[in-house]
Amino acid sequence: MIKNKSVYHLKRIYFFGKSYVYEIITAVAGAALAIIAVLSSSNLKLGLFLSIGVVFVSTIIIIFLKTREKAFYFLGMHRAKDRDDWIGSGDFEFIKSEYAFLITNASPGYIYSKCLTWSNYKYEFYFKILNDRVGIVVRAVNLSNYVMLQITPSGIRPHLNISGGWKIWEPQQAGLSFENELSLDKWYKCRFVCERNEIFIRIEDGKQLVFSRNWAIPRGILLFRFEEESGRLRPEKERSQNHDEIKQVTTIPLPINLEYGSVGFRNWGHEKALVKDIYISKY
Image 1 (cartoon, rainbow, N blue to C red):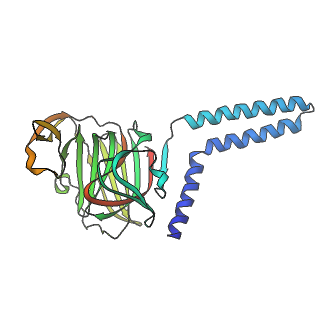
Image 2: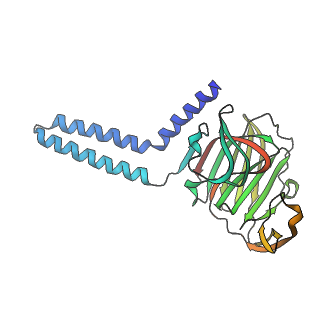
Image 3: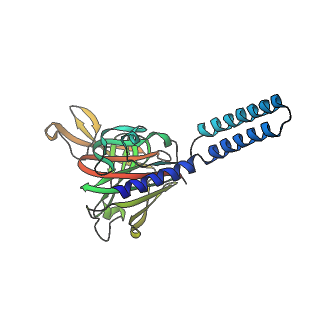
């Protein structure tokens, strides 16, 4: 635990410096110029006026840099506050004993609110499956339209969620089966690179490569499944909680438009996993 905390704090310091490098340089340069202006001026009033001008200009530059859209985000998920910018519903809570966040019984899931308009990006994180699988969301336009790559011990099950309807491929169909099953006792590092309609997937166990493959997001129009209940259509869940009331499953053709969108996690029912050290950057 102590080692994990030390590594986490070092990562936070590194990414803080990387994130605010221009602001830090501007502040230091502004302070230095203000001091030089005061010390080098024979007229004290003029020196003070120049230093105030330098500080003002530096402040404007810092405000501009802070309000521009960032090119990356690092979320350690090692404190409860790290949930603040996530949108969704279900159980997505900080587990102090694991120094990570638990995702379970969360449908439609959670997505990060600060990169909803991103298109091509890299999404890295560590995960540990506790029960069954973990659902990884990418290109989430909202909580009803996204790609979900569901990591199971034996392979990855791609999902498309369009207007709440699901289209699912098994690992064998998608060519995403693992040669060796993932352990439920290990942390793994995962990296998704979304570029146009391709998703490049890489899973590592420490420094050892476990899996490297890519999957293309289908284009055009596909049939999506909805449950029909009491004369109304509703999004089909992977397991229905009300089997007796469901009359039938209806398929509806829907166009796919997932060229941009945020990242996140989604687990349904008993599915349970831990996640931490999330890094999202434009690609």
